[in-house]
Image 1 (tube, rainbow, N blue to C red):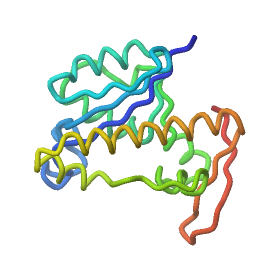
Image 2 (image 1 turned 90 degrees about the vertical axis):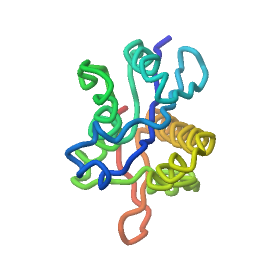
Image 3 (image 1 turned 135 degrees about the vertical axis):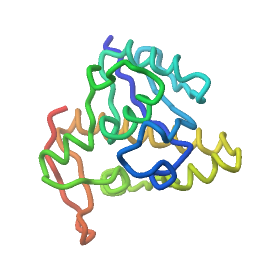
Length: 177
């Protein structure tokens, strides 16, 4: 059985706090979450377990995430010299952006495809980190991993996903995942 690892992480700091988006590796991971189809379970990693997270990703046959090439992997590059972009990765946001010539949010896809919304957003997770609310970050991050997994599986089965355009109209885009 192919081990697909769905992945997301949240950070300790915002882009503003580290001098801009060119310094993503300085943001620090607060919580990372994976779901492994090989194990059939979620794993939650704090910053102290970042090496275990990196090993989990390196063992995957495919890593699936949303904006992980430009963001999540860059955060992890603050902890390793290993070039994570060499791993077999499907970045759903990048794939859809290449097809549509504009970026979509995970929330836009989730609401149009499943009628569910994300439970929070990244800046809220940073506030939770500063308040020591790691359980809230883990729950939010697990939910994002679950949505990413559902979007990927939906696209695999139906060869399309839905999204809301900037005017709120439900649109469909073909995918080949």
